[in-house]
Image (cartoon, rainbow, N blue to C red; front, side, top):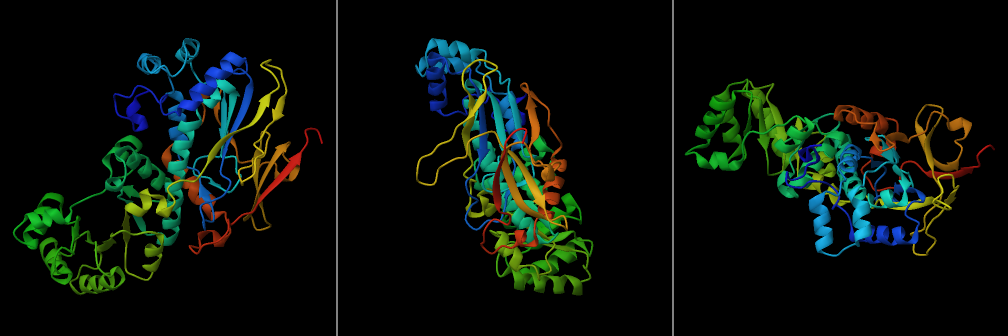
Length: 448
């Protein structure tokens, strides 16, 4: 696979070193102890949602699948490990042949989740599963945080277009992943060409204040842009005086002017004034785009403004105050021995301090009320109760090491919109509150 598809520099041969060192030292010790081959079940979940959030959004699954496929210890990686004496030769020999051959299940990308939801389940030998912890968590924690922020902003926008424009506010590779996650959450386009190239997300962009300042007059700048891009372009009108700029913009482009962008000031007041001025000048179809460090609260405050689109950067790519989802990757079951037929034993951390886990391989289902609206996230071990049959949330992603669930990004985006629409109305409230669905745990023994 071309590493460019993963958002990696072209000189990075694999994702194998997106790994914490202790994963390799655990592998080495398990190989020596004879426990590395025990069948194991790891689950990804979060114990709580970010403070005040009503739901989470699963994003990054497609990138996880790419990363797992590209998780290879090639000659360069092995040479680095050998030169740094990070693991012994026996472990290096094992790593040289590493290919994930297990199974991965998970919530479909774009689905919503709640505390305890097993958003991903990784099964195989302990050795091959433990190595994937860091790369899986780094992708899911980042992308799900951005998608959740994007989803809240999409709800606040009430159908108006959202433009992702945060590439200058984060790491260059994180920016590409953020664009993808934002698109899942409801954004319609991005300013980042790398995201457009890698994920076929629609791209937009026209000019910045520097372009206006380059020219002798604002009118000259508008004329140059319209001559190059056509009357349907978007002109930035707040470099000097907004009213004068709007007048000049319509005179240069005509009433067919595509849009004007406002990037400063009291956006609510300025948008109303600009709309009135555009209408008076005959540019009734000219749209208004606003930018300027927006978040979901600022977007909601502009609900009554004549705004057609929002451009969002910093607050989006930083998760609007919550840059991670605090997802963890925990061993929940393992075989009694390395014997292929050995039964699984539930295991879980039992320490104090709020970090306890629930052992056992889990299923998850969403219970609906009489109106078809979600009312609870139900998580259990054993068999799925008959009343929840057909409502299971986990789907196969990888079988026997082969990816079985790649899908177009637009399918993921539509899935999220449908999942959010299936939640109670309070899910879209921006006021701080508890998760919109309670998490219920049940145990149904097999054959009961």
